[in-house]
Image 1 (tube, rainbow, N blue to C red):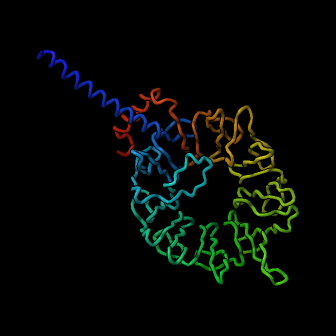
Image 2: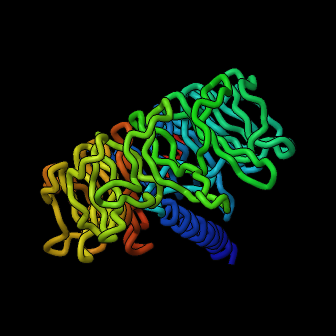
Image 3: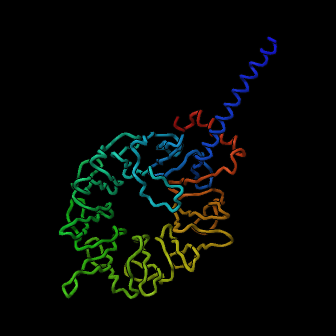
Length: 415
């Protein structure tokens, strides 16, 4: 009996241990199956393993990455070697990421990006090592924009928007009901007087450079699209007059008198690489115009995006394509290959989709990274965020366990 007990006891203990180990590994496998975002280089090779729930684009050598553990997010700032530079508490979350990304699945709502060496968070700005450089109390300030040209717009709950420098000093005291970032040395601000909203372009000294603006877009390549306020001849009310202006306020292109009757630009398409996408009131189609008002590419598209890397995304008759500055189609959807809506080139590559998988093409329309990912984001500083979805929990069981071992060893992942 004692011999049986001596055999039974260790076997039972081993069985119980294996049972709980199996449960632990099962949960670990589920955990890593959900945290499946990583980063690839321009050759399509994985340089940061798919171990994150979500992540931002790289900016200033760092990216914000998030893990979900026990339904709670853990947020890190990682470098290109996947070394955690610092961890940030979710109790003080990052500001919403303002960078535009057409693959929504890649973006994250608790991450921002470095600009002018600083990262905006809910209670101030952090330096490259996670140190607090500028401290702003959330009780007093509820919105903090990224730095642009050495200044950042911040919103005081009581007095409105103002601008601070990289030291945290107010260069322009909070006073506006709306404020955009500085571009080309100017920023659009709005103030309310006598129940009317009036907008201006100001310089860093808070001097009004351009007045009588009802609204519009920020400057890009020295030109801004605005709506000037013009009183009606009868003296009743006013109307919005669309115009392109220079930094001195001079009208460069009178959109209202343009032969194509250029109307309001949807989503504030800026001048990019010398051209801007505009919509004609005559045909309700989009084309591209240069800085002298000449239609380089006649209105013919149902939608159009800015040029990047010499190419632009357009939609025509339900088909998506990339065109060059002469209007020639460089790449269009074919043979089961689709282009994500509002896609664009970044670092000479753009995302495409085939059989539900994401890959990349170059500026010549050639597939350079075969479609293989569940989703993919644009390249930034040589890396792009991608998702690699586990087809089956048990098929990838050992792969996920390998990730767990990789993390336990501390190879660059926060413990």
